[in-house]
Length: 456
Image (cartoon, rainbow, N blue to C red; front, side, top):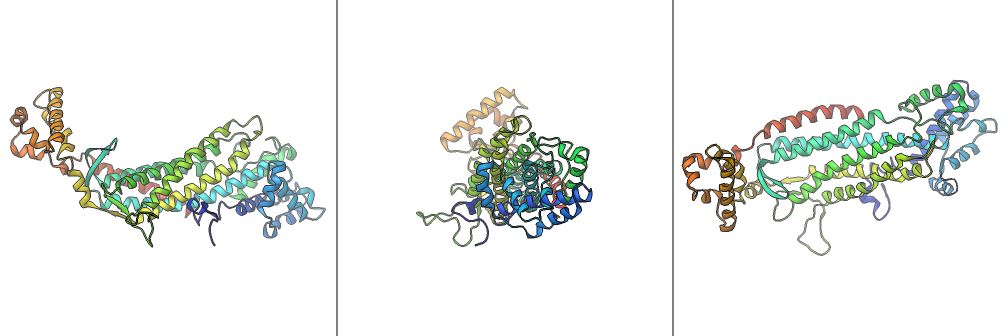
């Protein structure tokens, strides 16, 4: 079968991301580093040109089982040592001494990791752009669709579904900006040699690094970062924030999909969302998976943050702790984006139910407007007490707030009948909702232009 294998892995690793974060691709990127390094050193006459050419050819022919390297790493704490040995075995005696010249294991694996990350981020941004487009379409289509806003899970004020989608879009745009920063600033090679000095290459070390970075399509940092793990923690944070922005959408959709709410639902295909015990159920599968991804992300990020304290010039355990942690974060982010896109592309919006739910409180969601208007005729404290009493009676008597306010003499003296009724029209109490929608869409258009440059 294509894609990830295993009982649980296919849920959390997308078919598109699987080959990028695969062990085989990681090994391929390590080989690419070794071949590029030899090629640069040959051009600069640091190693014999014949040896550089022979080593460079390994990128076309060398294959090795990643599991073999992993098992070997049980002894050496790094898969690079066995990799370099395997590469050396494929070389002539004259070329063998020049493989991996001046580099160290962390140079190879860290740079390979950044190459994998670059590929993964380009895929993530490709799908994120589609998610943003779907959110922008929802925002525009439903910008005037009234619904109730909920704070602390309780009915609060009228809003529109378009503004709700705009908030989702704004969160995605903000999260993407953090990820953009990582893509533009932190995709740099690691090249420091045994202790971060490149001593084996003498004064030519930085020159090799500059050329090597260019060949690999990465940045050359101002100094080696083998013991400065900020960029890895920053990447983990950016990925976590991205998944969090998607989980926010997922949780909102799951809540709105509850039978007693029924404002939206994810249209399922081929029996999706079913229950093994309850035939009537159609579960929100996409939101469930995205939320599960975020729960895992919450546990992974602290590992990368903890690795910042790598001791001295190379940490005694922090570096290996990053390997699978970062790969998991990339996979979980890719899955979250892909599942979010599927959910939003198959989202059914029930406008009638939104209006019904808005009316459930029998006008109590307009209490703030009544309070504000009534405060013009009496002190705000007194007006607050009056409206508060009326809302309590409305809940107890299951009557409308308007009916209860008609029993308050000061309310009746303050407004005509038409004025009083107008206070309870939710469509006239939406404040700057349309302005905020326009702002979110404008921010998105700018972000979309930048994102398309990343994967275009």
